[in-house]
Length: 355
Ligand code: FES
Ligand SMILES: [Fe+2]
Image (cartoon, rainbow, N blue to C red; front, side, top):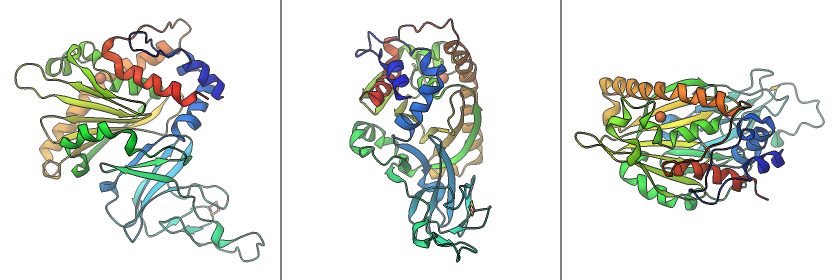
């Protein structure tokens, strides 16, 4: 499997000037996707929740990453946990969705787990000679915190997150993301490969295309540039046009953390890619803002309408590119200097599968 991925990403250029789009196999070969499940999603740091969305004791949120069903919880003592949500009896997910509960009770045979994953009850198991109550907890997943986000690393082998993204931490500090709250979430089934979403989010070259009437007017695509980038992150600056406009910043923590912050208003968005499959994923566009703004209904309605309008302009090009890059006639083309962050994603993928 990982051989397929190694081959697919072997030709990624060492320089931006020599960079091209990814080959068809990166989008069309199910073996490449299977390799990404282990080598990118389960191996990486993936955001699974905002701490402020789990403010209450007993709050939980289900997320699927790399084929692994997880649940993020806050226990009665206020501690956050990221756990497998696969029952230790016969494998039923103990919970779906999000909510608030005193315990996680599997709907199949009612084994009950604490919010810290500890098995608390298992009916009619006293005659089993192999049942050990102490050995049936929901496995805990490695976690990291950053600016109000909770990240998970499923295989437990990823190097610490923070030291790898220090310049990004410095760049977003002025936006105070840790103080933002989620004001709304737009959920959309998105029938294209996850990499097309990261690429689309991380270049503003296309402002001159689908966003000609919107972002191109406020933040011209040809004026955008990558201000910093390394193995695990990239930052794209979007300076304002002349007149009454504000700049904005988009950033990625690879593989899938996609962030937007406005220079004008204390707001941002988090594009979360959940339940990723080969040719589709669920996109949750989380709208974030300062608590002051979050309390103003007109602001929230306007923010939602604006975010939807911009994403509506991106849907046809993402769907169109999915059709093109998986077709037998696709020939990968050269990248512009405006697509540095796209190349940065490709470098990350290549490195993920090098021996
Ligand atoms: S599968 Fe969960 S209690 Fe049986
Ligand atoms: Fe776009």
